[in-house]
Amino acid sequence: MFIEDVFINWNKIRDKSYLRNIDAFKGVDSIRFNSPVTFFVGENGSGKSTLLEAMAIAEGFNPEGGTRNYSFSTYDSHSELFEAIRLSRTIKAQWGYFLRAESFYNVATMEEEYSKLAPCKVVPMEFHKKSHGEGFLSLVQNSFNKKGLYFLDEPEAALSPQRQLTLLLEIKRCVEQGSQFFIVTHSPILLGFPEAEILSFDNGAVHACTYEETDSFRVTSMFINNKEQILKNLFE
Image 1 (tube, rainbow, N blue to C red):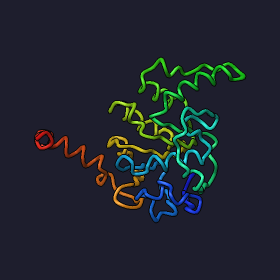
Image 2: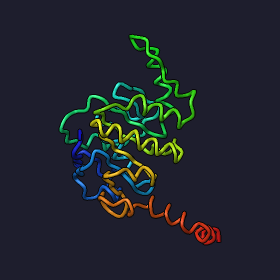
Image 3: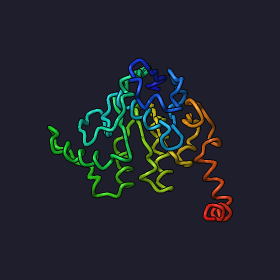
């Protein structure tokens, strides 16, 4: 594991910052990670992507995604949290990637531009000529290597259920080669990764939970097993 803890210095966060109003962060000065695969789960707006983004930026990645070599900005939306956190590292990863589903189009565009400017001839991956899901899987299969550090924000947005299973296989491959992952997701498929740590951002401060305790599992399971009754109650 490259990152074992994240520490938050609240003295570096403005008194009127919205970060102080996120329930998951209240009273939290540090979070310890215990698995090479850590999932952040919670309702929309619970703070999970905010923390993932801050950790990725603190680790040297571009706020909109890509490798550490990417340096561009189309719209600065990241919070000040990255300036207030400190990551406890055992060793610094030499390779990694920050994937944001919402800005993958921008990263794909820059990948083409960077390939043209490379000192030696680099064949672009041509993500724009692929579907969103095909482009993302191509990125994972060609750019995710051993002993890498990866931050993924809702990767399931690009993937069918079948392709999510493919992503699980790729994560397993990388973990077996010494990689570490932090993943924000609502997918009950991805959350099923064996021995992963799941941190919930719902119902108070950030805390560990089991797979069966996640809303992703409970709501999906309830819907599959009681579809007709749930839809009847919902529409009435």
